[in-house]
Length: 339
Length: 194
Ligand code: SF4
Image (cartoon, rainbow over all chains, first blue to last red; front, side, top):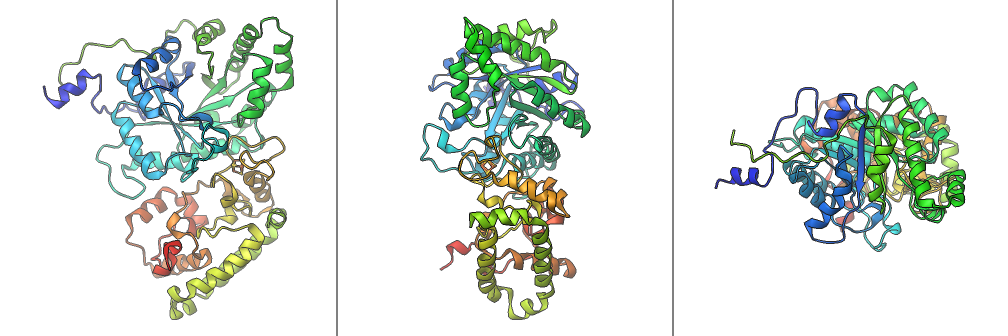
């Protein structure tokens, strides 16, 4: 069997040029460019070397999302790598988002991985700064931060559009990547967050996934400013949501996970509920429904850490799919005949 | 010094002017530097620069000064060394995620930029730091950039050209952030030099 045929058998698509007007042709990009309400969700990465554990974690998400985010040691905790998870899932036909954090790798590693990921069929990336190593499970690690999320965006854009590394060396097949970034609208300095978003767009961001939104007035203020700046027309914004397990869990998150803002009244609501888990879910559904009404919102991003089983119910109950069946998992066609 | 660093942000407007003046002087001194040799002036100027900027900004001598684009708040003091704005972890009240006792360098930067004439420069996407320039004089680098521009002499380095192109806006405002002039050997990899 030729190497090419082997590649096809493994579900690897040969390098395919994106359709006109698209950067990558990924399913997520298509859904967004068609103006449909997109849904993405975060996968809980396994502490294991077994591919089955990855598929297991993806299963509850796949039926309701357009793409699955593979986190890159988020919270500075070590798990299976983002690129490993994305490679496995992409080859099995899932839409993936490859998260790249600047904390653990320098520019040489990151640029090389971008090519590697693209060769494995990964089409969406999310450029992140990364949490400090101090909050993670190995606080003695050396923090890298060679690039920041913004220069990372520009670096990947340069690779994709100019076909060169930051060293100026030519890339024979540039990676067709849909470039994303994060934003944290409800965290200090709130008055500058829209400007920072603008900077990310200028650097190359085409879509944004925000951090958790629990504070609607704050988020609406942010979006109003975003619209004033005309940014909602230049970038697809997916608002971050997630079910809280209990008041205690919410408080713990607020004081131990960087960048999480949960207003007191939200926590009180969970405290008063008989079944906090159910209440957390209901709250999440309500938030999605409110967020969806905001002008300039292109979708939601669900982060249901350890509550992945709730994701499909949350999305279904929120009604955001409006009858649409997302295709995070494409039916695997028979291996294509060699073109 | 931390206190002085905060003072500098509060006086960003005045320091911006002073800074422009210093840079102008450096550029004007180019003929003199060229005659003595940039390689030979590198060390004494770097020592002077490190003293002054260390005091005022807790400068770390990255060699690619962008203070005029960061509200006179030095981004090398950000524990993540971010060059393009705050991370998502800033604590309530504007304190740093990693060092909670310290004000977020970028919250201050945005404050300082408000006071500056060219405060809008903070919106320009800055390139990553060239780590091989650590310890070298950024003032001299600016002087060389301006002089090289006048003489239309450019580096042969492909890497430098692509960075200058990919971050053209940053280079316009802060030539030292994406330099193109030839570097004297004494200005590169200083940490590794005896
Ligand atoms: S909080 Fe501010 S100073 Fe601290 S790491 Fe984040 S951006 Fe840097």
